[in-house]
Length: 402
Figure (cartoon, rainbow, N blue to C red):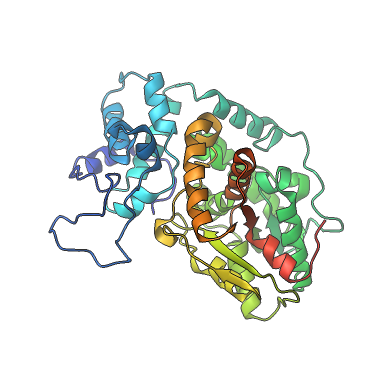
């Protein structure tokens, strides 16, 4: 998966000119290889329905191929008109990464990120919700515009080698995830710290809406704060924050002075080392939702499942689309869901109904997926439980976090 970075647009234009326009990145049905030889499952047996925005809008312009073609036109013509339709096409991509998984040679998702950056550089007005989010990050250091973060955990230092990076969603919307995570790590014998008010938004949203300058600003601020706190390892709950810190920050500042791990990776390791002990059985059939930015973008698939399988009483039943071919939750990198909620709610309902066919409880490893799916479940009155992984781990350990 290509990482988010400032793209050399001319280089991209030359690369995309060799696209065969086969449509495998979005067209419904199995991938048909160009030599007409069947591809072996499951490695290349992609889902019948691939691109969420094409499935919803039914026009090729809303497909990876259509967006990349538009990007090429814009890159070739400095006078290419920036219309409301072009803005909508650019920002309804959920960045789920399915197209880049299918077409690894051309990486059409990189074209979409490059198009957004090009639009910002040309002075295009972002959709109003994104303008507000970027302004909130600039002024308040969080996507919600809150003046200060609530207290996450009592008696936790701000200086230590292991530092928990909660992210905006856990800090302001889902503090139970942050509390559970900290409680688990303390119980496992770790000395864990938290930056508190010194933690800034990771910059994920501006990085993906084309405002890469703001992403760079937040990267530098967070790295300075983590260095000052003595970080040797940074532990992240949110898949968006994880992808940003682990893969995007090094593109801005070079090699990081600390390790970045996702909580699912760390929990799996602690269970293997027998530092986490379960005292309670959780009799549940659950299905696991792979967050796009943890799975396809960062290749973390096995660790969350290993953790779930280790919890006494848990039975995992996979959804039809899982792992590499998991369907998007609809959050759309917080960009599509902020700007086009009716569209992204439809994507979320599709994923929730798929989950409900497998089990009555969906577990994920991303606070953004958790918040978006939980909101839709409540709005639609669906009988489904949505949990983030640390919540179930804490419960099985007999921990009752604040």
